Image (tube, rainbow, N blue to C red; front, side, top):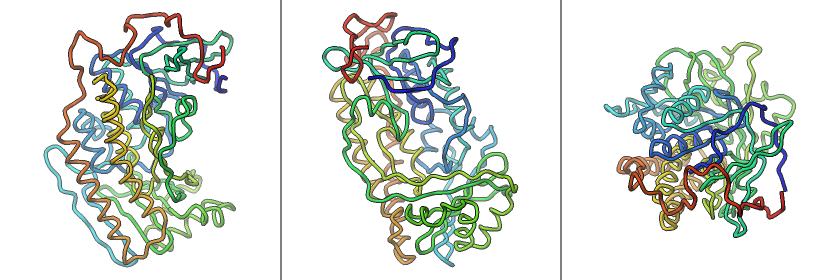
Length: 427
């Protein structure tokens, strides 16, 4: 069976017939994984359906773990040089109560940032290419294929006007989001499903320099004010998905302003500064989940493997953390390395999903939401401590390939036994 996909341009084609790793998706998780593996000397191909530097749904806010990762990888300074504003305070608005927390800065982490995805994803892609990864945009993978033992051996690409193109790899990584093709093709097991979903509608408005993060909460609704690039702030209205279906179906703009006004007239006034023709973005909500992280010849990273509601602004942190831990497992090259990776991923993912659901369920009152945020802060602190102590992913020996890889890196044609796609059907 071959999945439907958009045809790729006739001139686009991978340079090689075989790679150490092929990554489907080149956003935060995929580009970061490509960069780390390429920096370690692997031949890497990453493919993304969207154009280079294009936008995507995101509220942009990075928490401390994500900023720490970017600093460790040498990418924080380029993001600041690209005009991403430094966030030095975060304020929680619980009804009429305001709690402002200065963000402790140091030589490594001067504060937090919330880059537009047009900036962040592009810088990650550029870093991956600089490290030697091959990244192709506006190209769609249509299927995976496997050997007679069921081990994934590569991808299939269909282009208009020509036969399907097969490219093999020692491992295929799905970094292709919630609707992951890779997860579907390998029938990745669902390990856990979250209990709630929330909807988020956001737009951009001009902001004064020096503003910090602002998080707003009143009974049954929430909102956020997130300074980002180009002198703008991302202003989000968040509600339970059921309420979204009731109140937003006739028009996002008016319903969003009603929520913002109920949260804070000042926040609504900020949102009203946006141009009249400014476009809003909406995410109706998806139940969180944790999927099986790896199997024979494949792995999942980013939202493809673990998704939690955006209300805790931890999605990019999860993507960058798991990209590094997956790269370490691949370079370790043993079944034990992959088992340890999934164990560690599941440990932190379950904690984050627990607390995210506790916030996104909107079953809290103003008296107890603060305690839920303090629990989340404790998880973030433990995550930062764990990341700070990790070495950068590296190959164990410069001239030896990890045991995971079963085909030579200079192989330009798939092995003869690559006769079936992932679902077992003859091509």
